[in-house]
Image (cartoon, rainbow, N blue to C red; front, side, top):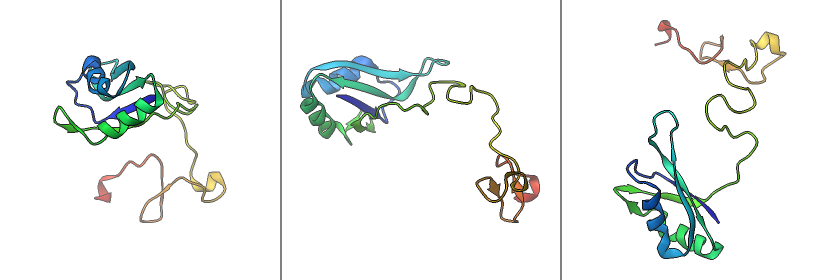
Length: 132
């Protein structure tokens, strides 16, 4: 069973995570996700338990537990979907700027877009100084 562990203190490493889950059963792997650019922890990780029953017990035993000063959020990991981004510029757009549609008149009606309080159309959510 693959387990997602969130709200992990930035000081925690793979071995610390493994030791937290070992009392519940055999840990096949424990991995803290690191930021590639800074080589710092991103504050979450994954633990793979060899047995599903042990995995469920580990989730119940560690979810909400205070670990190194933070309350962990632990649940079963969901499988990655096609739309998940795998880093910088990933996903379907191939990175960079992607136009998400034009003004309402160009798109044939109100099908999304952004409309501010004054009824005008906006693109990208940027505010002008007179909006404050």
